[in-house]
Length: 293
Image (cartoon, rainbow, N blue to C red):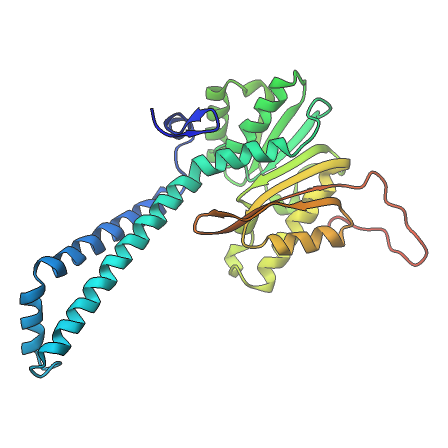
């Protein structure tokens, strides 16, 4: 048996959900192997390489300089190989086992699932979080359903297959749609969740541009809009969490909580949970909030 994630075997999790963005993993592994082979060549043929460098016009017969250069490049290639193998291992772990573990934590951050009738997973991907929510609904005997929204129809079809494999297909609905213009009415869902997705919105503008930040906060506003008063939102994402917290504070969300840092895909990540106010009172000189902003 392989390592376990909670009560699940990692091999079982991989067999159901597979790995998204396999090309990234293959790229890291191929480069790690290439650098490993190159560093091995420097180690095995260090003396001939030094002689070759010494005889070249760059070093003008300086044996010390040739040995230093060969040793330096050999060490750099070896260190690069180690870093690339570590990056590949972290990517492999983050892609499914960590995502599965975080999905359980996100589900656990919602106190009462028995009263949940409708839930939404933004950017559901292959359904790790979606199926975790559906499993929780099933455990509580709820008649509720969770909707998975993704920009790709092919992804939603594969998500439905994973729901069937998990035995929760009767609790799951998948839709293709644009998260920047959610195809749902105001105050529709009891719970809104999203895992490692929001940072991808607006990436066509570049991750650190004002335009990309505006797109991300727009999606956050949409999530708040479709959330019922008193409803709970739970997000797990990379890098931009402080930006989300500021936006949630601007939207007057309650009980905003940020988890400790978790390293995922070689960068920092955090989980953020919040509650939409049951009522919003407009005081003197105060403008009623528009969640679409």
